[in-house]
Amino acid sequence: MAMFFSNVWPRQTLPPLLLGGVTTAVGMTVLAWAVHARSTNVVYGMMALVGHGLLVRMNPASLHGLAYFPSMTAQISCLAAFALPFGGLVGLSIMSTVFTNKSGHDQQDAKDGITWAFVAMIPFLWLCVISTTFLGNVWIAKDNSHEVFRGVYLWNLFAGKKSLLKERTTRSDVSETLALGSLR
Image (cartoon, rainbow, N blue to C red):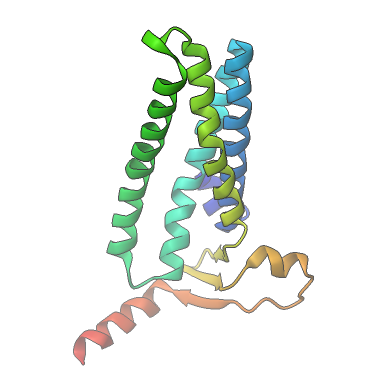
C-alpha cells in the first residue's frame, strides 16, 4: 500500500505518513481495550491495523526526508535504518517495564500488565500523529523529479491559501550541484 501511495496515487508523502500514524494510534488504542475485554478477534484485527500503520509509513518517510535533503542520501538512509530498531527498543523497554510493575508478584495478573503496557504506548503514538500534521509535503512526479512544500502543509491547505509555493527538484539537479561542489 505504501508503494501504491508513492507510485500511483496520490504520489505524495504526507497522506501515507498521516494515514499510517492515525491507523497505528487508533489500532493501539483499541488494542489496549481489546486485551482488557479479552476480545480475541478484536486483538487480532487491531494487531493487523497497527502493522498496517507501521508499514504504510516506512517508504514515504524515507522519500520525505530524501526530498527535503537530496544531497544527504547516505545520512537519511542511515537515520531511517537506525530509527526503526531504536524506536522498537524504546517501545519494548517502556512496555516491559510497565508490564513488570503492573502484573504484580510472579506475574499473577498478566492481563492487567499487558493492558497497561499498551496504554503506556498510546500517548507516544498520538504525539506522532500530532507532529505529522506539522510536516510539509512532497509531490513525486513521474519524470524523476519532485516538488517540496516547505512549511506546515495542512495548515496552509485548511487556511485556504490558493497558491502553495513548491520547490521543484530533479535527481540530476542534485547530482550536478554535488559535482560542482566537489570541484571547488
